[in-house]
Length: 287
Length: 156
Image 1: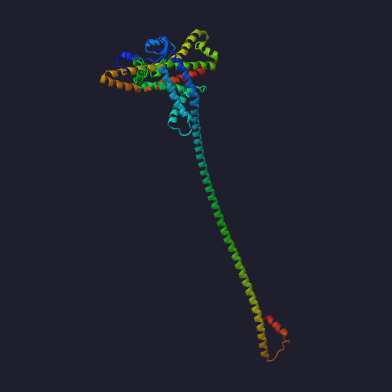
Image 2: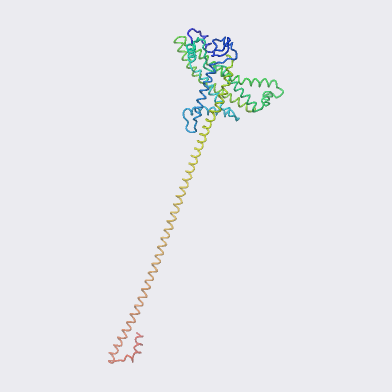
């Protein structure tokens, strides 16, 4: 547990709070409490989520770039083999669902799959390790109260991250819809389907909801799964404070949940990728 | 559960990384994959071609062998025929030669016989003359009786 004196409620709350940078009490800085965060409003950054997200994206990018740089048509080495395996998997998925011609879609799908997978994978790092290190760093290097050092390591449990990605996909969807069907075509799809021109208000409501629901469901599905998984990890971690018997049981639970979570992690990354491809396909073709 | 500017940051990072991947990661990998696919296809095609060529050359080889066999038997046949011809020819020649020799022998024999007969006749006429002169106990002039003697010798 991160602190000796904290209660279970405080422990959970501490684990679910981001390291937030913003403007509060008349100055810029890291928030020390939920009240500080509330005061910051919209113009604040979750430094931990963003840093982990970008670091993981860099890891993914540099790894794949290293493989791509030395990619040969000859016998592939270990890294190239691994990278090619993923690339071929993504390429097959794109080819199965996406019929148009757009050089962006496959790299988009690859980025989403690998990035979301890596961000989800952070969930498997034991919940206390990285926050504890951050707390110790804050306590001894920055002389802060460790209870005020918030550190969330799984970016996909931050709705900002999932909504950021889902909205980016949404922008692309709108952009390609208008580019391929024209503004008129895009609006026609919204206004004249599925009931024809006499059902225009109903069409607008139905199609509008279905359009908005796409990024929302994309973001919330990933966020919900990961947030729930993370919360369960935290709840199991609470058992470590309950003596040897409960702690041992907790360890077993933790292991079981982690193994099950490997499936969820991969599945969520795959679903995010596949849905993005499908949305892109819809944006490229009349439906 | 606070929505804040992190969202914008993540969106920007997302676009950037997608662009990076599209520019620096995807094309080289796909190029390598396509190149390998092509190489494999080429290799398979070459193997197929080699296989077919091998079959073809095998077929050709058996054909060449068969032709050689045929030709060889033809040559043997012809040689045998020629040999028997040569034998026949020489047999005929020998026969002719033999006949010729026999004929010449015959003619020689006839000649010899004739000459012997002539000789004999001369001798007999001389003998007869001598005998007759002895019987007549007188010298018979050769010149007087030449005609008689010739007639006698011709009768002999």
